[in-house]
Image (tube, rainbow, N blue to C red):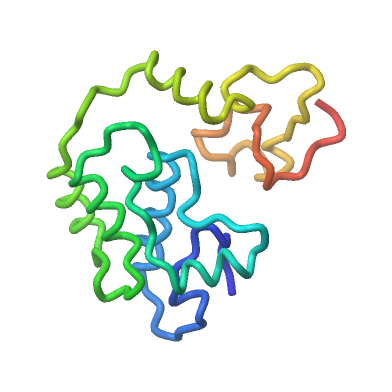
Length: 169
């Protein structure tokens, strides 16, 4: 099995052979869920329990896990991506786009709202790194600068538990 337990589709967990791009739709639903709520779709103390919850449990709507106003259409979009049966998920990026454009926006998201959300939910990521904060050399992880994406080419410090700390800052 290949994947991150908090974002892996049920059919990948179960080892189905007919896996297609809808595993990515499921992962997108997991990412959207986290971005909306600050929590993973399914949490647990161990990896096996997380995996089993992805296979067996229906996720709670994002609007029920946050005090933020999330429009019904956004809940429906995320939950459509998280359907257990891949045949019932959106099948393509075009279908996802069509669903996304129908979503209503409650309040515009601006820098002030973003800062308040990060400070309230993930304060350790909302503040600048200190001299004692572990850092990671993106070049060491991704290879030479020409192989580093434009999104990361200027980064020297990342806060990411999945990366291995560099011995030097």
